[in-house]
Length: 124
Image 1 (cartoon, rainbow, N blue to C red):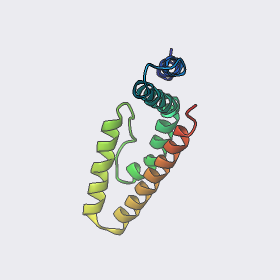
Image 2 (image 1 turned 120 degrees about the vertical axis):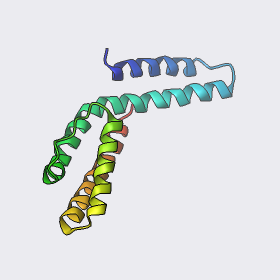
Image 3 (image 1 turned 90 degrees about the vertical axis):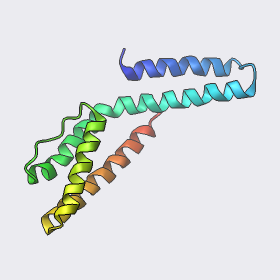
Image 4 (image 1 turned 30 degrees about the vertical axis):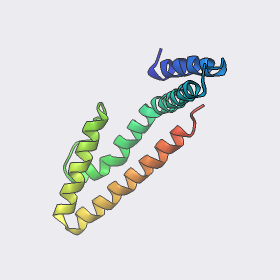
């Protein structure tokens, strides 16, 4: 089973418990909150590969323009750190090419957010 399938299965079990009438409203609310988290995680996992591939492609021109290799998206925290460092370097450079690259990188990150929100909207 994929990670997304496991999360959906756990969510299904939680949904069954919630529908079965938990002993009190608080416990039922907690179960429904856990179910909501599972739905969002499943949607996020299902879209991970597509979003990662898009991010690599979308950032490649900016990175190449700075003489850097394309992203390796094996760890999201490393990608975030690398892009953050690049943004700091672009701000510090201050020349027109750096400002243009920074604007493009910001555009890419804004679009990434839009794509992630769209993926989360598919949570069922």
